Length: 84
Image (cartoon, rainbow, N blue to C red):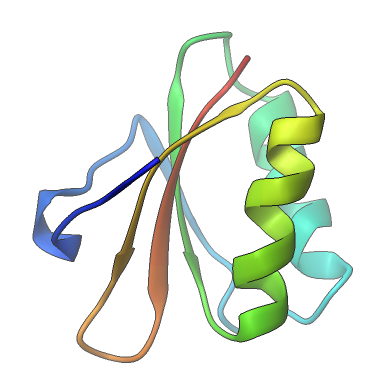
């Protein structure tokens, strides 16, 4: 995983889960990944320490790859995942 500028991150698809709380943060992420083709990328905008810690861990456990993470200027975090 690399840490890059938020402006550099783009994905094939994007979701914003900043208004969600665990466990819905990963439920929404997983539903988005389930609708994708292997190799596609998903850019997830999230807020808070719990999803920042849990989403990469759970995504990796399910066979996906965390490509990058970046802090946006508004206090949110962008996480770029590749579907496994």
